[in-house]
Image (cartoon, rainbow, N blue to C red):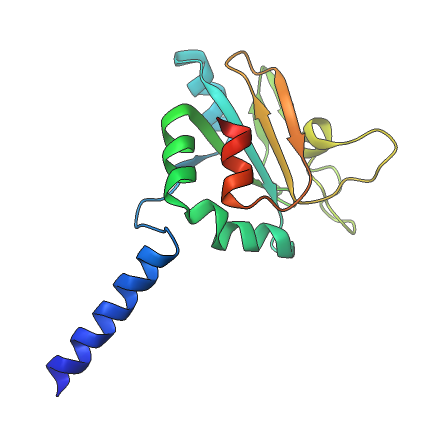
Length: 157
């Protein structure tokens, strides 16, 4: 009976992975500090994922979109994928400049690099925030909404 139950459990988890297009492969996220070095060695397109632990849409994208096989393959193959919690107190050195979270002890402590790259004129900073840069780190597009796998793939390809 134990063997039979084990087989049923294994089949259940295997089929759920197939049904949702998810694999054990993961996006190879890097930090801004790592990105700085990587761009100097080998220029490549960049995808930036700004998130916060309290962001419902960010969590949903992590659970679904960023587990999609095609999204993983596209990001890992053609982009440096940067993931950053906007509330971090980490000092970031990027492009010969140092960025800090000047609001760390205040409500909504958004890091200054997130504010610099993902702010919109006349609108408060909001999440989710996704940015796409070309090989020269020139911003090509910015998105402030939930993106399912097909929508993100259309942007990335």
